Image 1 (cartoon, helix red, strand yellow):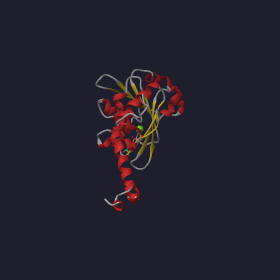
Image 2: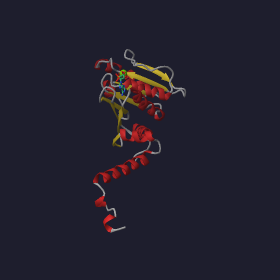
Image 3: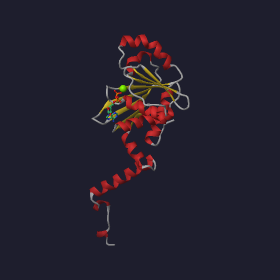
Image 4: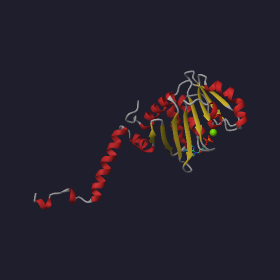
Length: 217
Ligand SMILES: Nc1ncnc2c1ncn2[C@@H]1O[C@H](COP(=O)(O)OP(=O)(O)O)[C@@H](O)[C@H]1O
Ligand SMILES: [Mg+2]
């Protein structure tokens, strides 16, 4: 082939180089995320801020439920999950997902007028859904003793409006902070406060993203 007709990098249009670069980048993401196509999507939806933090975006009520359900297999008696965020952001939906994942009997509705709802999994594990929305600070304090019994008991505690009981919560808890992005989109920031919640988050991250990040335990 005459030298003038040989393709060289300088002769390839810049847009084509960009296109090739994009192709290989997406192949790397796909290989990283594993064979399932939706794993790639999940990888791109989630942001790992540090080892103890994971930021997810839910695009629907159903997806928020699923994010809750993914957590269920990693929970054991004594674990504490705290949900924070404004009214209507989706805390109860997330709890419903956890309950579904744990295969508890019956629907889980927001217990706005009930402080604690109890469920039992088929394996005999207790799930306590605690909603502190209706509590004023003074009441919260007076009830603190009662709640502590659950916090340090052998069931799983999932607490909505956990900030109302902040002073009595153990540091080693998984906090799920939800925020509005638009009508259907929600930000879900998960933060581990200690060793046990760190283990839960690590396993959860692997389940949600389809792989564990480099350097994770
Ligand atoms: N991505 C989403 N995740 C969760 N809920 C959503 C989402 N998009 C819209 N919603 C709606 O937001 C509301 C959330 O209600 P709920 O879970 O009871 O909130 P909270 O317990 O935080 O007060 C529901 O009406 C639900 O249909
Ligand atoms: Mg609620």
